[in-house]
Image (cartoon, rainbow, N blue to C red):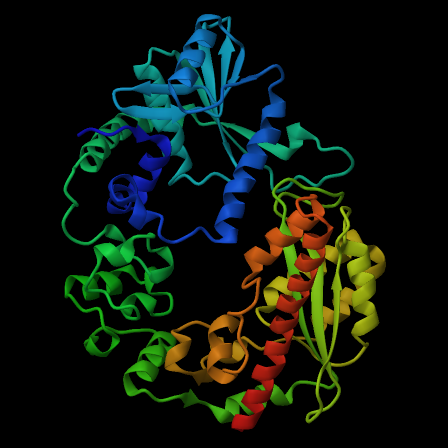
Amino acid sequence: MPITLSKTDYILYRECPKNVWYKIHKPDIYFESELSEFEKSIIETGNDVELVARKLFPNGILIEGRDEKAQAATQDYLVKKQEVLFQPLFVKDNYLAAVDILKYDPATQGYSIYEVKSTNSIDDKVHYHDLTFQVNLLKKCGVKIDKAYLIHLNAEYVRHGELNLEELFKIVDVSHEVDNLINGIEVEAATALKYLSQEAEPKGSCCCIYKGRSSHCSTFKHSNLDVPEYGIHDIARIGNSKAKLKELVDGNIFHLDKIPEHIKLSEIQQGQVDAYVSDRVLVDKEKIADDLKTLVFPLYFLDYETFPSAIPRFDGYSPFNQIPFQYSVQVLESQKGEPKNYDFLYAGADDPSEPFAESLQKHIGETGSVIVWHKSFECGRNIEIAARVPSAKAFMDSVNARVYDLEDIFKKQYHVHKDFRGSSSIKKILPVLVPELSYKELAIHEGGAAAETWNKITNGSFNEKEKEEAIANLKTYCGLDTYAMFAIWRALHNLL
């Protein structure tokens, strides 16, 4: 039985056809994994950016819903030659799309179509196809399209005072790209509609079998029963070694202990495989010792939590600049001592940068190593804070000059354990080296959830009791991040 192919499902189909088949025919499987707070925030960000972009088109009328009433309202406004429509709904030949912005031009008696993207640039592998699907459908519906545009955020825009919408967004004419794609997309959409209309589950693996684990679709395990929970797809950066992965998959080789010798892996990949196959912990004590000897007491184990606001909230910010709202630091005075924790969390609705920097200066002295995990993040935030708070520049520069990245020991494979599974994430390292510490029982488990929790604190989503609880949960989470670094540092010392 034919189904209605939406624009969203068409884009998902291009990533993994079988995954979308599950979404339509077995939604219980497709939706069995709840969206993470990070994934939810991406959706919310898209909605927020679109709402702001609509302000570029005064007097637009919003059509709500995805039902027959919305279809009828769309047609009514088209007959009336309404200048601007938001979310007009079109359905024809089993295709469906709601257009972000449709603008009528009386001079040509045609329309310009605008697709809003909450990104700082155009993704030519996705965005052109998204817009072309819509143009093709509107032409089927008899709508004359003059121009096709993509609207995206301008990464170079820096807010000063009120938002300047003309500078915040870039409006790019992609009519030529759409024209070049339209015939191919019409064929591809028809193929997608036929594939997704099958009542019986398509046989075989899904196309994600040729991708690394981080790129797998949500229904991967249902389509690829021969793939183990930990195997070749988990080899570090195997997704970038497409030829190697394809040879292994085509050879029906999915287990790490079955990889033939002629498959040449990188040094890091081979170290990961060897640790698993031999079930041995690989430790280069000399290199670990050399690294740790470079550290100068007192040691400051430091971690930041931030919120990536797509629409700049404060002066000095560009789209998706991180708002630093929290830090935790464990201060260790001597090798055998115990750390003392200090923290900061800003719950106000204005820019935290200045109070953040002022507080940090109270807890980090002029000497001593600053230990972080994945230093490009903290160092990058320090540079940004220094630009917004000139009085803190010398201090922030000093902190960056003293930063040591504890993750490097694991990225360089001075310590390899099979249960790291090729990752250098602190969430993978901690359970192995310090099993008594865990994030599992925390109300907040990862950075995306922390960011969204702070966002809710500042936008008034919580009542006072909920706000207090959220602040306590954030402090517990960030505090564990820094204590975990200390505990891993100590566990490494105990190996020497």
